[in-house]
Amino acid sequence: MAREIHDTLAQGLTGIIMQLRAAQRVEDSGAHIDTALGLAGDSLSEARRSVAALQPGQLEDSHLPDAVTTLARDWTRTSGVDVRVEVTGDRVALSTAIEVTLFRVAQEALANVAKHASATSVGLTLSYTGPAVLLDVRDDGTGIRASGGGEGFGLSGMRQRVRGVGGTFEIESAPGEGTAVSAIVPALQGSPR
Image (cartoon, rainbow, N blue to C red; front, side, top):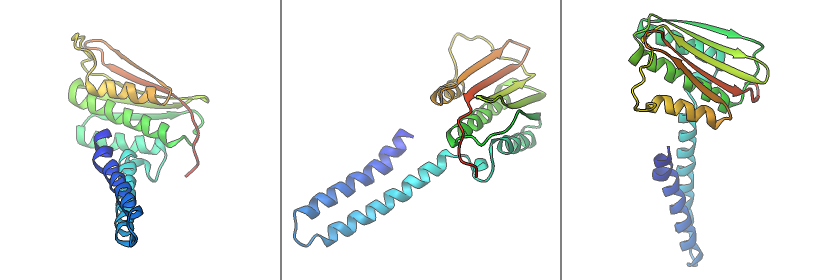
């Protein structure tokens, strides 16, 4: 993400600044201003594309419960492993940051099940508990072996994402007993869509 911003937005904004500085030094600055306007428009378009890329398409027209249900259905279709989805508690409209965080954790947890678990079933529970929202993804697979190598990129990324919104992230696993990934985040409310 940082590289993408550097390569697109920062470059565009630098170009705008250079054109406007050049325009300050000449009487007929129209060409420099036109170039700066073009760069500004391109940079704005790129910023919009970058922001859109951060939000999963499944969340564009629906809220988190529907998005994770769709994710689970699609994942079952491609993996052949059944996912039971359960949503509990009184649903509230969550902030985009919270919804994206929980959706991405569900997505990565299911990807890890497909890659590593050899599971035959998965349970995905989304619980609205008032001040917090809990996402729990449990499989009946092989579990995570303690390799001494630390967390992989996917687990580390989930942990960082959840901490970034003020939440907690936990993994429970034992060889042969499956894995449970849990994220608890504050139920920061957003605008209803």
